[in-house]
Amino acid sequence: MLPSKLYPLFNGIRQGVQNYIDLNCNSTSTHTTPQNENINLAIFPNPNSGTFQLQSQSEQSLFLFLNNAQGQIIWRGQLAPNEHREIQMPQLSAGLYWLNSQTTDGRRQRQEKLIIQ
Image (tube, rainbow, N blue to C red; front, side):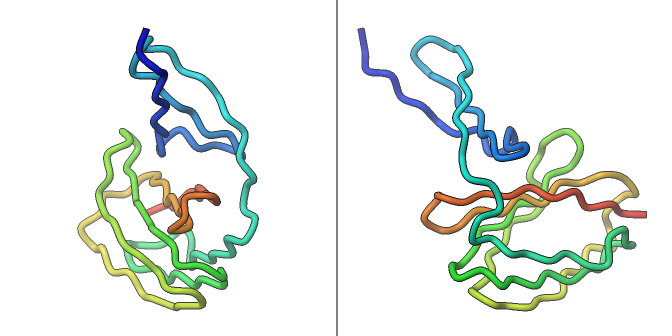
């Protein structure tokens, strides 16, 4: 039997629980990870019309992924520690999106709702 390899499903992060898929047996397991520790990320205004601000007060750089309701990644970015950035995406349709953030070392993850009106 091959050794088990677990690959994180980033879209599965909810309330500090990360889902993994085991490619050897096609099963899903759950691994608890610390939630929101060392990730202080503000998103405002929320709801918005496709233009919003991201303010990181994290001690580490962050990888950012914006997912639509179907789980597709529609934007990727990175924020440096304590960076403030305006994001302009007027082409986004009204609806619910998820902004996923992860420290560059992969130890901390966070997911926030983003509402486009």
